[in-house]
Image 1: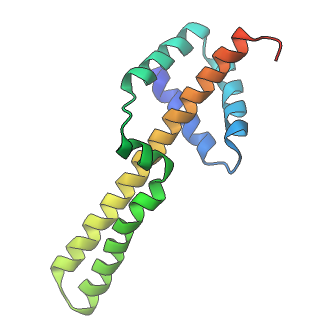
Image 2 (image 1 turned 60 degrees about the horizontal axis):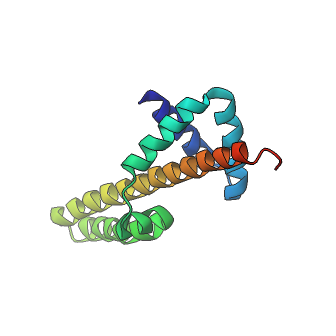
Amino acid sequence: MAQLERLLKMAEDELTEYSTDARKIEKLRRKIGLSVSAAEQRQVKEALLANKKSNIVTQVVEEQRQTVALPFWGIAGLGLLFGISLNQPICLLAAIVGTISAYRIQKWGWQLQARSLLLQTLEDIEARIAQPNK
């Protein structure tokens, strides 16, 4: 679904700014309200809910992606240090694997956070439609 991907990119763009979640939702809500019809919003929300996998690992990675990736960054640094100083190619391999793992964990957490932000925004839009006085 191209619309879902476009909205996820918009949510990721909002994540790059340093602001509160309420401010991010407010800015994203305006963008979505201008560019996406109500029917498409419902379809996107249904697709997000269908693809949502909620277990302890995804929750931890979504909320603390940098903390989860930190040990892998440590492995990458130590592998590089020992690989260069001790001239051990296996340590350099550990540095490469650690770097790739840390990067992928952080990217996955970023995508999970963008999905969560988009879902919260769509729910906020529905709540505002149901309660027009606010």
